[in-house]
Amino acid sequence: MYQVHQALTLLFWPKKRMATDSNPVIYVRITVNNQRVEISTGISIGTSLWDQKAQKVTGKTEMAKTVNTQLSSIVSDINKNYSILTSLEKVVTAELLKNAYLGIGPKPRSLCEAFDFHIHRFEQKVSAGKKSPGSLQRFKIAKAKVMAFMKSQYGVSDKKLFELKYSFIADFEHYLTAIERSCYNTATKYLKILKQVAIVAVEQEWIAASPFQTFKCTYEESVRHKLTMQEISAMYSKELASERLREVRDVYLFCCYTGFAYQDVYNLKPTDIVIGIDDELWIIKNRIKTDHPEKVPLLPIALEILDRYKQHPYCLTKGCLLPVNSNQKYNEYLKEIAEVCGIRKTLTTHTARHTFATTVTLEHDVPLETVSQMLGHKSVKTTQIYAKISQRKISNNMKELKNRLAKQNKPS
Image (cartoon, rainbow, N blue to C red; front, side, top):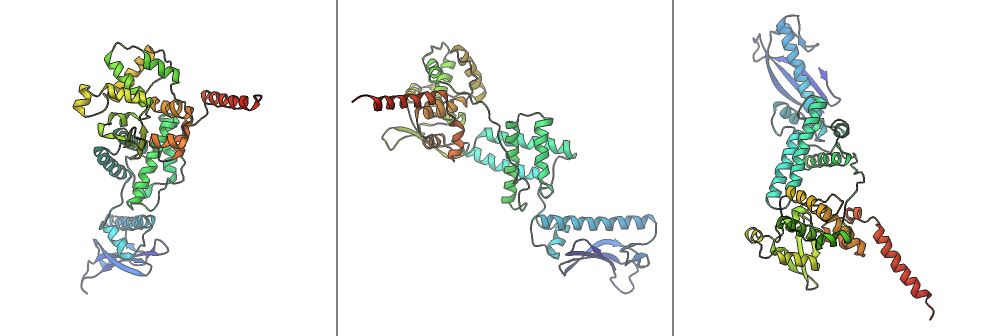
């Protein structure tokens, strides 16, 4: 008898089909917490060759070695399935263990299967316009990096979910930063995706708990470029000879005065403009990245830009508000515009969003909670990354203070 675990024992014996059976089939009895089931191994042996106490075939023949190896493999496989069921925090019964060993019922899922499941669902949300294609691409890249890591670290391209431990994500972090030499913030994005996929596996009941739950993903503070009001004015008033540059400049300035990210401004439609509570024009729509509502009253410059493109052929054909290039072309043209306008900053589709959050709103005393609503953030904590005190903010506050003090100290 094999005492595999405290609650699990295995017993092999040759089971005769009739009294005269000289080559019975070896059966294995699985006992879990005093519950028993029997399984045929399909291995027949001569009765005289079986050692019941040793639970093996006697002798040193090739046949004996082969059969004993097969029996050891059966013990190992049953033990493995018991460990899997235990890791899933299931109530393990003899029948459940038998079915798992025979491959009856759901099979253990792998990490790549969990990635594929999540990516497939995300693709469906992208098709429905609920999620960003850019985010989908990051999930696909993250899967490729995890597979490359497993090949490098373990010599395999996939692992069963129940095999994953905390050390997996810690080693993956080291692989990204030390081997691939990714910057820490880029590595953190992929680590967060790995944690997210593990949570999906828990939700699907493929594992009982995420092994990565306590792993902390923190971003290093980075420089967030934004334009000053002087730079915005310089760009707005600059005469640009090229129509393509004028269009990109206008889209960029529109984002500076609304806070929309590239994917959101790309998908803006006339139906997104509504009459707000103040009887003014607003854009109210769900942000593609988070599916959280953005509620933005339109400032005069934003309205002026929208009016400029009402009859633009691209907008009429596509049913959109603005002629937005591909992300790559958009960023490429922004470099040209920055050079022409004398702006010595790297402009990207996202710097306009930073500019709206800081220069246009927070530095003009728009409350953080209001900015958070307009940016479509689910939490004010997300908006706080923009809320660092700038020199312009300090200057404005001190001017107000000086004015108040001057009034108080003025002789009556």
